[in-house]
Length: 280
Image 1 (cartoon, rainbow, N blue to C red):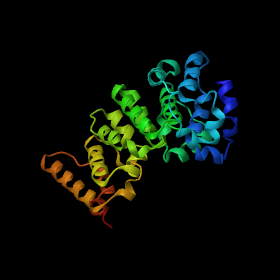
Image 2 (image 1 turned 45 degrees about the vertical axis):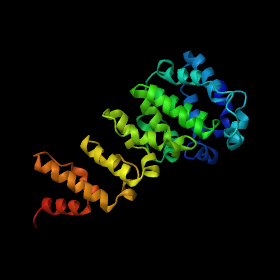
Image 3 (image 1 turned 120 degrees about the vertical axis):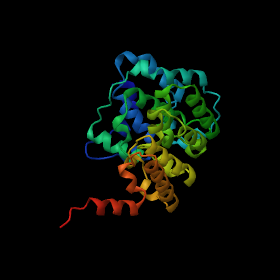
Image 4 (image 1 turned 90 degrees about the vertical axis):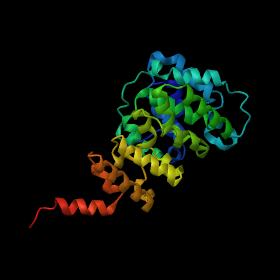
């Protein structure tokens, strides 16, 4: 536990069975709270760098109480190179142990993230998501957008995964739509899963064409469709048609059709039910 960070975030303490209203409104400080409980004592230098590069040190009170005003300030304080090195160093400083979330932490994060995405996170991933969420509160949106592109282009697979999972939590998230769409073109399954699975960003921001293409790629890559947040409300007749075409191509090639394609084509689902029903 990081004592000095714990003191600064004590206002946002999570009590068993409840979710503090302020943490619900400010996911970045919720993430900081949970990270603070898990920062290894040996990672003291990294912890201090977090305060410096995100601006939560000397001005923590202002960041908590007036995030909107702070985000519009000049970013002359921001050292991009220092932030990037801190972002990269998260794995070395924190390690990759599972978060082992408590029930109250899990519930609060589910409310903040719109899914149970964080259940599968590792500690370095939580550190990187927290960094991005915090710094986005103090930078102009255009600078946040540029920073995210840099982190993504320069990052390794794990850094890209963390960045994509952080997208719903950064300010001006809609500006990063081109980055998120580009990420769907990857052939690295973990990176693709980071944007497509347990992530509310695509359902919130993707145009129909990009969302549909992401869903089809999920089927092609063997990703369970139930993992796509908001699929039921983004399902359209065009997506159903595309899924049927995909299934037809698979059958013609002698390949299996994903068992969960019925989530996209109700007619197929009913046909499957009739075909597998036990005669009375």
